[in-house]
Length: 239
Ligand SMILES: [Zn+2]
Ligand SMILES: [Zn+2]
Image (cartoon, rainbow, N blue to C red):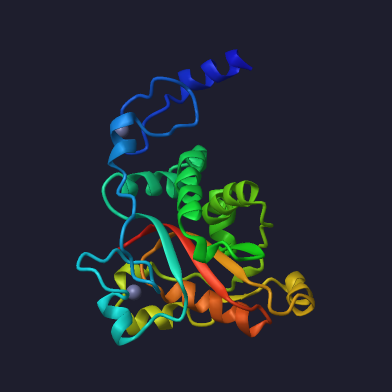
């Protein structure tokens, strides 16, 4: 086994997910020490609804004071600095191994926010089928799996994406809502399950929250199908 790991390293040198520097050992850390320390973790005062960091105190962010998002969201880190290349490599460059360190960040956030722990199951935000097939995995599901085993909460893949959507970052607010409208549905095999467990409380898991539209839409689909409160925990929040 040890030999196999060294052989693997020979062909696939393990690089830091942030700076691409060589890592000392072939373990699950994924980041060099400097990049790991530079991860922009979210802590301190945050908006009680959408989880955005609040620089000037108060309970809610400016946006939620005007028009509160219909879902409680918490995030482990901001989507900047080393988190951008790391998540890009996790999603698009075959660095599936990064679910270990990125999952650890999510677990830490879970331990910080008691308001999202009162739930019965974790629901990963799904990819469109073809995208998942070409990538070989859904990154949100890998992260949710790490948390499920740590938290002792079942992983419930209750949602499917019924059509591909455009990257939310490139759209304005109205187009973002339109982009994800009717893009999600209950997994056909899961609708009975939700009916039987009416009122079950769920936590959506995703890698990046660029806008709140995707999470709000997923929560709305789950609630219409019989779920109770739906909240969300994401790895990184694009501010
Ligand atoms: Zn590094
Ligand atoms: Zn807010």
